[in-house]
Every structure is written in structure tokens, then in C-alpha cells.
Length: 323
Image 1: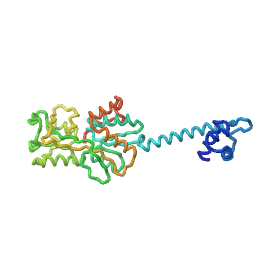
Image 2: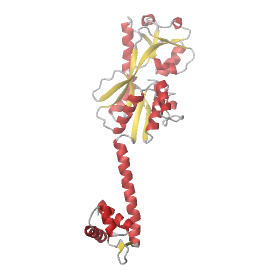
Image 3: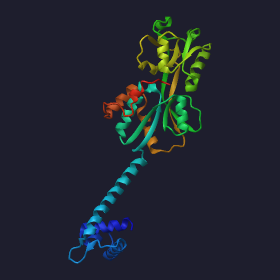
Image 4: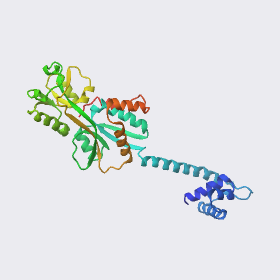
């Protein structure tokens, strides 16, 4: 038995006439009759009552027809869903992100993506940059957002945002009165920094900028970025952070641009050998929409994004720390 037999049977059952069914199928009547007879022989019971002028289904044939129609409905759905999966309209994607993105882009990005691709399941994982890199390589996440540079042949990446760096100071610090701060003015300041083992790219960037300014920073405390803000506000020292940190409201803190406007790049990264259509759709969407809080929000509004938060709790996850 194959699908051809089932299609022939369905046509005869619906037309109640072998001649009309043959014309509908585009075949001659004798071969159609033989195919139905072969099907009945294989099943071991009659599908049609041929004793009358009009072909009628037997009770067994009526039951068989109902189930055959469900088979074709299921097949049609399978083809439809497989076609959607082939172009990335369905599937599951695990996304790693820096928690500061909950304040500056990831929530709006996820909301807009889910509006356009509601059948794609997104799972969000707030992770440090180094954790994301390891999770990408061992397949625990499919895509991540990390700080540049990224030097690993197993991973592919693209820049999605260039972000200025700022100096974080206690609000009552003498330098807080300046509009911009030259890094050499920080040469005698204690520094609170992000641990290198959690994100070597950003740590090395900050150390390199300080060396270019003629000094090696005196590190008094290592902490995660949200904790850094608390420590700076409490007077433990100063820090150099991405500008998006300003979206995290913290009293007792001053954030000032740096003379020369040094910056850090935010990358989207994925496994170089990952050919998932769902991943390709996500990458294309990020290229089109960007990871920028105001712009992403405007695009989401234009595209009809709902007002509610994104599934997966990006906003709630943002209560963590930016890596």
C-alpha cells in the first residue's frame, strides 16, 4: 500500500463513480479499477459496494475513508511545518547575552523577533563572555552576544554595535565636575575592574587603554559590572565601563565620556559550522533591526510588536550583572 492507492481510493469514494474519479486523476478507468481491487485484496475487505448503479462505500470503506483523510491532513501539515522549518520560521534557539543588554537592547530585540517569528522558541541565558564562548563551542547555546575581539576559528562573529566607553566615578569625586576625562588623570586612582577570567577581551581593552595613557591601573577590587557600580558609588575606586551602563540607574555615581572617545564592539557570535535555518533567520533579523535600545523599540512598534515583555524574562534576567 502506498499514497497512490490512498489517493485513488479517496477520489472514487468522493466521486462515487469510477469514470469520474479516473478523469479527476487523469488516468484510464481500467487501471484505476485494478488499483482499487489490489488495495482491497491487500486490506482483506471490500471498500465499495458495486452491486448498485452508484458506487457506495461499505461500512468498512466509510471508516477507512475517515482515517485516510486524517492521514492526508497530517501529511499536508507535515509538509507545511517542514517547509517552515527549512526557512527558519520554526525551531528553537538558545541565546546567550550580556546582562547589560537587558537594559540596552535584548528585550526589544527578542520581543520584535518573536512578533515576526512566533513559532520560534527562544531561550535566553545571561552569561559572562567567556562562558558564552565555551557554551557556543560545546553546543549549550546557539548564538551569543560578547565583547570584541573574538579569535577562534570554530566561531563566526559580526559586529552589531560600537559603544563608547565611560569613566565611572563617585558622584562627589573631584573629576566628576569635568565634561570629559582624559585617562591619564586616573593614573593615581584605585580601580575596580571586571575579572579577566570572566571576559578577557574587555579586561585587556581597559588595561591597554590605561597603558597607552602612560600608567598601569592600581586594581583594588574585582567585581561584576553591576557590583562595580555599587563599589564605585561607595568610593572604592573608579572604573571604565561601556556607555550602556548608564541605563542602570544608580545613585551616588557619575559617568563621564573619555577624551578620545575609545569604544568597545559588541559582537554576535555563533558556531561557524552551524547551518541551522532558524539561526540564519535570527542573524538576518539582528542585521536588519540591530541591537540598540531606542532603535529596536521604534522598529518593534512599527512592526506591530505587543506591549508585553518577551517570553524568557529578559527584563527580569537584567537584574543580574553585565559581563
